[in-house]
Figure (cartoon, rainbow, N blue to C red):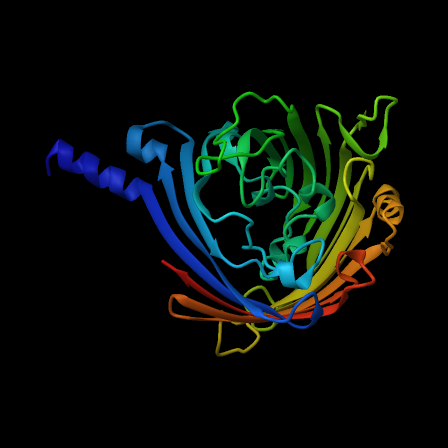
Length: 374
């Protein structure tokens, strides 16, 4: 074999390509603002490159992920504050969601990652909550609702640097600095490189073995507008935007490789309540994997979440003659099974006091998710 052929084979083995497509039929069947179904979808094209195998760059990897989202917005019918479908977007577009390079150090015990980076891929995340469709189970709303146009999470990320260190296999400490203004190629303004709005700083430390326990804190480097208080000129007063969170998950039944293995998860987040409508919230639930012994990919999950509205948000609504309840509460039950490359997932949600608005009826949402992965 020639040297050129060997180099081509090496580059080919270093590259991992993936394609995933998800289509959701989601609709409000009772309560909410309207009862109808909406079709929406999400296309992912990913590439991971081992830079050591490809170019001899020891300990380095690169990752790229393209997304395309289209379809309806079912939360317009549900009227919730937190959303009901984690692939719903307000603008249809194709965009470069992630593009980063990671360098490992100290025998892979430490690493640095830089580029367009999804904060929720490593921070404020419970793996056992990943089957649930409601966005609140991805990241707490008290953080998701911050920033100039949202933090660096779906549907748009931001330039970031992430550091991670694992002194032992079961312990880790990680921190990241992310542009406070999210934007990627495909968004109207593209990638923001000015950092005009400062940075979002976040750190998390945890133990991860058979289960996971972690604590995290976040803060914006620049003060944000207060949602209620103004100065003498009528301009919003500037406040520190910050918060913290706790999360845990642990197996509660079954063996790691056996059927009906169950994992419970719980999470709590709190924010300042001055710069966002949410003062905090919590999520909890259970995941049962291999529900049926003969169906290794079958999974069942139940989750509940509650988002608390800040005192200032409630006061703003009262000033307008309305009434805002203390919290929005939701429950979700979902089941998924895989047949070859296709996963079928029916889902049911029940939202009490959507958006805290007493004028909106409790909403019952039904969804069917079909996913393909190659």
